[in-house]
Image (cartoon, rainbow, N blue to C red):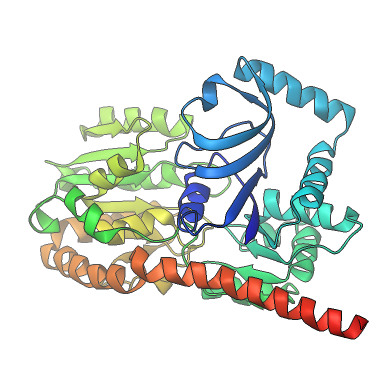
Length: 404
């Protein structure tokens, strides 16, 4: 079986998904949906197709890189800019040539605004029979962008053109159908795949969650993230946070500034976590009492799933699909993303109620075993690709019979 992925090659989510299947003996290829010339170090044993890429920034990868290697990332960026000036749609043309060359059994675009739009453009220009196309919805692809004038028609065109659709939550299935989805809906699964629960268990601090003295805060402040609201909520809980430390990961520049000012004015120790590996991040979750993640749009927040797995009590905004994973007031707290007062109230409750956070950790551990263990998710993913390949072969045989 030959699969061509169109996805962000620098993303750990892409790496974790593909790593579920790259031991099956299948012929797997990755065409970066955004031409940055970067490949995530966890991507292994597949072919990756850049235009220009810097040899220094890709030295340690186990993937087979295609494209033009140059001495530095600056030189690679210059090459990509030259291609764009020559032909704005150069990446679509490269993708069309690759599809013609590989003749993949299926194409899987992960994320719509880059990968989905790119494949749609290639399909419209492709002169031969196009392979079966799987579209995967990431995060805010439909829930947020589906409400924006610049994206509505293109999203509808993607959904009308694809053969299969996958996503992380029932909410996005409903929204996709409302926007004209014609293809088959696949199993609802986390876009990052599952967790090796036995392995990551060693990252959890021993003892009950109530004994932990760290607070983890997701630092995104952008088109969707609302870390500044979370920081304001933290400042409102200054008295209750004595003896605790707040750690912020993936902060935007303005979040770094705000965190320093909040720490100075309240005396709460607030540290910025430098870039670290996924295992190191899980270790922090395993030592944290509370995780706070606020955004105006998401699907399943991967951070929420990591909190569930590591026994961290989650406080998650209501604009994700958190209600499909946690029970508000029992296994987590669901809050509005842009009002610090209810977020602060949730933090106070999670700090004061030891029984709540300990019981939530027990119940969420059961959810993790039933829905997040890689031994549960990985077979479903493998079966999904086999089913699509089988359906394609059946259709091909029927077409051959009609031609006869």
